[in-house]
Each structure stands twice: as C-alpha cells, then as structure tokens.
Length: 459
Image 1 (spheres, rainbow, N blue to C red):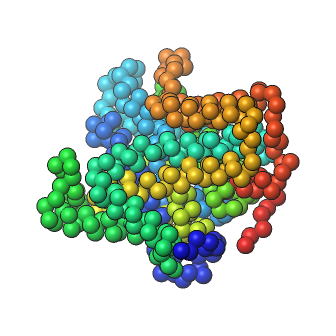
Image 2 (cartoon, helix red, strand yellow):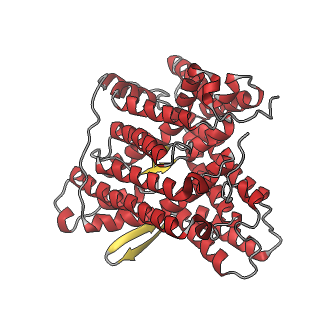
Image 3 (tube, helix red, strand yellow):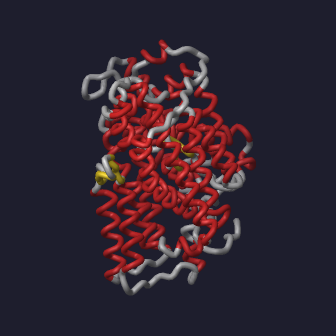
C-alpha cells in the first residue's frame, strides 16, 4: 500500500496528458452540485429559472477570475452556491409591489440583482481585513471555532450524498468502492485520479445495467438520454441582464453573511489540506474579493452566486496534487462545455446515485480535515469553554437544516445553519472567560490550518 505519497505541487512534472486528466477529475467533482443549483431554481420559477449553460460558464470564468485575484496561488474551484436557494424561492414567491403581475421569468433578474449586491458585501469585508490586518481578524477564529465549522461543512452536505446514493445503491457502492480501491492500492497515475475512475467505471456499469433493462428501485430508467438527443451541438449560453429592486436585495444580500463565513472555513480547510498559508499569503482579503467579484459578475449576466467548492477540496486531499493549474484546467473545461449543449446534457445524464457515491468520500474528507484541524492544534476539550463552543457550533450547523428565518422590516431573511454556527462560535469564543488559545503564539500549530503569520517552507 502506498500511503505516504509526497504531495505534487507542480503538475507539469506529471506531463500534459496526466494534467488534462486531473483537470477532468476536478470538473467531474464540481459538475453534479454546480448544475443541481439551476435545476432546483428552475423548479422554483416553473421552468423559467437559471440556465445550466450560463451556470457552467460563470463557474469557469469565476474560478479563473478568483485565481487572478489570489495571485494564481489558491487551488480552489468556484461552483454554484446552495446558500442562495432559499432566497431564490422567496423571490419566486413575491406577489406584491412591482412583482404582483410579473411572470416567473421576469422575477429572476431581480433575484440575480440581489446576488450582485451580496457579492459586493464581500468587498466590504475584504477592505476591513486589509485595513485592520489579518492578525486581528483571525484572533477571533481559533481552531476551536474553525475546526467544528469545517466539520459542519462536510456533515451538512452528508444528507445530499445519502439522498443521491439511495436512488441506486448498487451504482453508488460501485463508485465509492472504485475510489477507495484506487486511492489505497492504486499505483502511479491511477492513485491520483480515483474520483475520475470512480465516475467512469460506475458510469460504464450504468450503461451495461441500462442496456440489460435494469431500472432503479423506484422503477425509473437508470439513464435518460432524451435531453441529450434534443440538445444542439453548439450554442451560445442564454445570458440575461440582472435588475435591481430593494425588496429582492433585502432578500438575497443578507445571505452573504453565511457565504462569507463559509469562505473563511473553506480557505482554512484548503490551507490545512495543502499545507500553505493562503489566509496570510495571498491573503484572506484577496480570496474574499475574488469570490465576491466572481459572484457579482456571475449574477450580473444571469448566473447563480459562486462559492469555493468543498468537493474539490476533497479531491485535493485524495489526489495529493495541489497545483492550482489543474483547477484552472477544470475551469476551462466548464467554459468549453457551456458552448456545447449536447455534451453538457450528456454529462448531466450522470445518474445521481453515482454523484452520491462520489460525494460519500468527498464530503467525509471535508469533515475529516476539520477533525485534523482540531487535533493538530491541540484543542483542549477538557476545558468546558472549548466543549461549549464546539457543541454549540456543531448543533447549530447541523440542527438548523432549514436555516433561521426572521423578518427585517417587511422582508423575510433566512440565515443558513452554517452562518448561525459561525456567528455563535465567534461570539462565544469572544465572551467566554478562560481563553486557552491566542492566535500567533504558536506559529507551528497555526501552520497546520494555514493561518500562521509566516510562510511555510515548500517541500
């Protein structure tokens, strides 16, 4: 068993063909969740919602834009954010004021306008961090806070993995088994593309099962190529200009509070995974600005909000290939696919059970990174304050599965469970006495989660 493979930080050493395969692996990892957002939004807007083609090009362009803002250093992929689904649903249900006589398709641009403003709020936080310094900001985010938040990111996604896998457990287990086998016993290139192999082999199994007349347990066909046959080979994404209204802005913009906390958690997770200090270099202010601008640009042209994707962090952990160029290849694939409706539909035909099987591994990896964050930083859980902080974060992050909805004036605002958990953890850490951790006192411990104040030496 090849358990101690050294991480690869320059994918050029593998050669161009292998780099292309690694990029394809990252594209598959993000694809299912990224296109699921427009599919769900279309349900809210009675078929007049977001376009899969626009979603893909916004994810690709947004990722490249993020990499430019972060000095090409951070191996993160930006896909569609699920945090704004509640906001889309709320805007779709608006029936007063200017929305009274609108069709669903006419309401959608206003939802996107609210997301543009939400993205701009990232810039405000980035400016604060730039002015006061990352040291003062991160002192409120010790491992006892960031660790459980990262755990919540993975476990919060777990129900979707089970729901997808349950549509056909045989396919899900094939995908999961292939990933495990190649990650543990694979040699050479096969060991660093377990996700791609899991998708390809399980999809081949789905083709064979479908050809033999086998169906899913609920009686539905394992594969459905109806949309593939109807789609054209080449076509421009149907862009749409956003519109602005205060009601829609008040619905969508506050969600940025949740996604900004998710961003900080994701940056800590990626930093801990890769062993680089991305929060200090290139800086949290740069990654926030890149994420926020990518979100605003996406929504400006009728796309969903973008967010750093935990699925791809899981791929980094599995493959041990940390070169950001591989992520940018995945972004280029997404852009190309956005102009090829037939190929987009073909990949969309990937059974949800396979996505579920892959997600079992990826989402679990995210939570495991959070556990490692806590362990490597020696968080002392014999102290009640640490137990209280971690307990409240975990229960809030996982317990508020539908978020917390309240009225801001005449507008309904929903905070996601992760946002509640982050706010509660930060508050409790600030007010509870007996703080046993001071940011910056132990750079070696901070380094394991990527938030020390000195660059780590590359291997």
